[in-house]
Picture 1 (cartoon, rainbow, N blue to C red):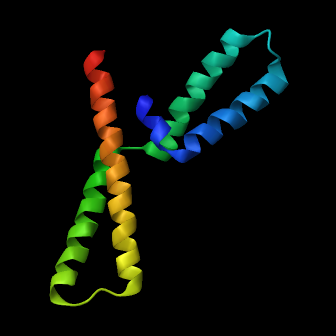
Picture 2: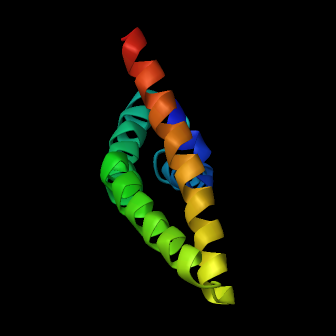
Length: 107
């Protein structure tokens, strides 16, 4: 999926996996190495990416809770930091979801 490139760990996972595969199998067995990489990407997606819709809902609920607290009092530094982290995570997840929808619509 194209949206996986939005996650910084994906490139590292690919590089590490590819380096270990070439070391173990050599360059002559490219097709099996690519099949193994495909399987590894699917596992990585389940472990790291997971269900983006569920993650978005959880983060939106947390953002709403912080926003309601912000209306009644000033937020602490840790709460402001968490709010910024939530906003950043949501932007990334929205972009991933949009990219996945776009890619799936062409299939």
